[in-house]
Every structure is written in C-alpha cells, then in structure tokens.
Amino acid sequence: MSIHKLINRAQSGDIQARFELSIALIKGKGIKKDADRGMAMIHQLIDEDYEPAMILFEELEDHKKAEQLKRQYEDHLDAYIRENNLTRIKHPPSLTTLNSVGFGLRGESKFDYSTRSHETTHYFLVMFLPVIPTARYRVIPAERGYRFLGKAPLEPTDWIPLFLWSIVIFVFSIFS
Image (cartoon, rainbow, N blue to C red; front, side, top):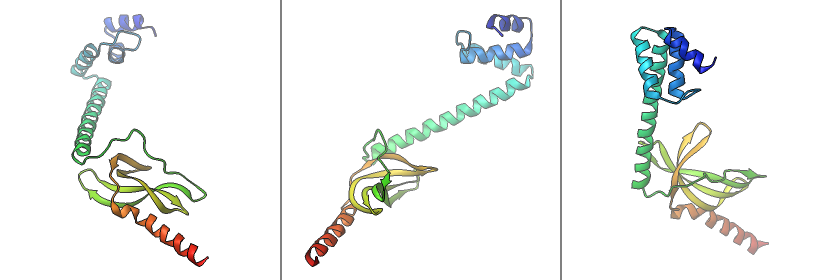
C-alpha cells in the first residue's frame, strides 16, 4: 500500500492504518522520518487501548533499557581498560593451527570478578605446546572463543616455555 493511501486511511480513523503510519514515521519508511511524531501517535493509540501499540511500546522500552545497560557496561569496560593500562587492539589475534603448529592462548591469571575477565598468553605453538610468547591479553570467555578487552605486558613467567624448549634443544644437540 502506498504511503498516501495509508495516510488517507489513518486520517479517516482506521486504527490499524494509524498504527502502521506511526511505525513508518519512526523508521522513516516511505515517509520522512519523524520519530517524535510517530511515538506521539503510539501514545495516542495506547490511550485508546490498542493492543499492538502497547506491545510495540513495551518492546521499544525493553530495547531502550537493554541499550542503556549495554552502554553502561561498555563505559565500565572502557574505564577498566584505562585504569589497568591495557592497550586497545583493533583485531583479535590469530588462534589457528595447522598440523599442530600455529597460535593459541594458554594459561589464566589475574581473574577479575567485576568484568569476569582474566589474563592469558598468546603463544606460537608446536605440537599444540607453547613455545614463544607473542603477547598477553585480558579476555572474557564468550560462547564461542573470547572477547578481547586489551593487550597487557608480557610477564617473566610467560617466557618459561621458551626457556624449557631451549634446554631440550640444547640437551638433544649435546647427546646427538
């Protein structure tokens, strides 16, 4: 249906058309976007006890609350990153291996209950065993993988696997 027919139906008092027009105004679909006018129409429809308008309003309010909570959480994480001297990263590091050689995360330390995060070390792996530390990250475990909050400085203990590999190589070179 064209927007002109919808407007005519809405002006003639068709409540469904008024509801559809309010949504069109909120989204700017087929008509110039005017969210304030669209929401005013939604409120009028709610005053008339029009059920779809009530449901839409509740969904919009729930969405608004969810977005507000998300912004608060993001602000909290931004402050956490600044306070803990983490370096922001643009892309997460590679966590892929091919024939047991590649990159992966090993270890968990410095757990933080407020963000549910911990620090972990990104290693170059051989036979899935850590060899060379490349970086240290603060991460939050997610459903699939991790959410990377930022990069942290490597710690002396992160170098232990490289030290052990060096000893193994040295011993094998002596006895070979």
